[in-house]
Image (cartoon, rainbow, N blue to C red; front, top):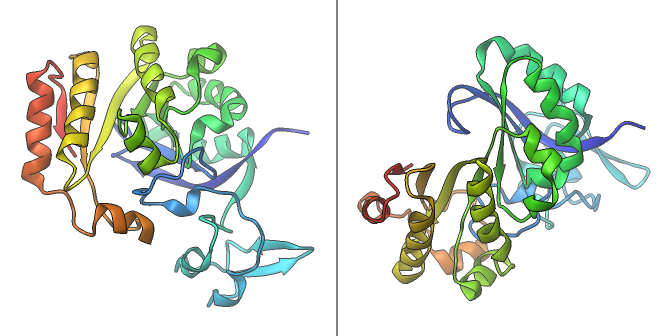
Length: 280
């Protein structure tokens, strides 16, 4: 039986998921439960509880054999099912083989520079990616991973040999702050930061700046900037509350990080040698 992976969605054209025009593949399921996640419906796999079925106005969901079945052709993408789900999941997921994903990529191949796999957390599908990436390379396109860094990349040399670069989240460096934000102490992404730099596979680092937490923000930006220097891009991301679940809003607030505050952190990073730091 061929390997499959749960695919949440495929965006044919994206100019925000790496350099150039890219096809972005979002996998379902994540190793973290970040309070500030703006697509928390990708965190867990569907438990088939059925809570979403009666709220679907298009009758695109039904229960069959103890499972929720989604009819994509009837779906109007209203997101009522996502709002009704109590488990940070989505019923709108397709189990796809690498060949099926590749077939969709081929449709856009003449117009893209490559693909970016994301999530959820794409590295959870490492065996699947080792099948998919060589197919994409056969088209002369690049393969990037948008990752939270929770996989120990040192243990997966075959995956890295097929990956053109990792876009790594460094969400925090203080271990207690990591536990608060992520439900995890955050040690592995820091180890991966050093390893991917050394391996020449670090495409970019990204850090979200939270309003009202200057000490935590500053500590993270300094840590990253001093390590990466000018060797990769450093994207300073403004916290935006859109799509963030209520427990995240309670901690982090319902206001976006001010542009001028984010610019100040980017300037700090550049002053420490991260010359490619910028706000997005």
